[in-house]
Image (cartoon, rainbow, N blue to C red; front, side):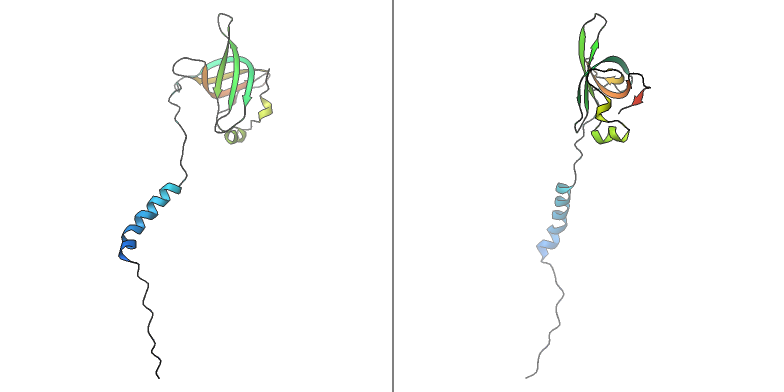
Amino acid sequence: MNAITRRARPAVWPRRVRRTGPALLLIFGLLTAPIDGHHSHGNYNMTEYTTIKGVVKEVHWINPHTWIYVEVTDDKGEPTVWALEGASVIQVERRGWKKDMIKVGSTIGVRCHQLRDGSSGCLLGFITLEGAPERMFD
């Protein structure tokens, strides 16, 4: 008996897989790709800085944004708490900031971009600690 040897046929994908495969790979790639969920700063007046000085009430060293709450005395002598939004923890730490540098109860100066509606909120730009020069925060 002679052994019949057959050559192996090259693998051929079924027609349906050949047509839909690339589309499925594209969809899968889009669904698993990292999504940039950052929002714009359109709610802040980015064309000018507002300067305030006040007493630190709270420091939130959290992601996605750091927050500092400062009590500022207005022209009428009334205290107002300002919410100051900063960059992420990693971004401000790369600029040399550490959480313990901004202490509750200390007085700081801030240059920031105020909310467009004029309310007491800002996107942080620069901070001046007591007895120190102004430094970029965000």
